[in-house]
Image (cartoon, helix red, strand yellow):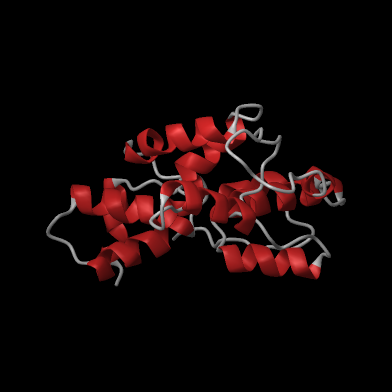
Length: 190
């Protein structure tokens, strides 16, 4: 008998919260109900909720103050600002410089965030190499994709429906959401 995943509620211990997988929609609903910001990535929501469960207070958002300090016009010689937020203004600039096929890949966004102080010219020059690299791992907000990929790498003869059954079983358990051969036991109880 597997342990049932606890509901996300105010009294939940932060350590228990981190042990389980919650959908982004569940995280957003909890944030909305508690008066917390519900925007951002799944990782940001998890951090915000864990802080709230631990302290009972909202995590202060330093991004709000820094959004007002953004550059007015972006040129090749403009300096990449601290805590850059990839906005429509940034998208328009990079599309103009790199072509209509430009998109904000996660790897490029990470490069921008970790290279504050460099120029946008350097970003334009670095972009082709950055996006050409195959990511070493899928970001944590894509746990489902990682699980399904690993499931099929180990079980090429299985169906997507079977992979989903195993995923649903796995995410209801505490701990890691990485695929393991033991997850196939969820197919036996169907």
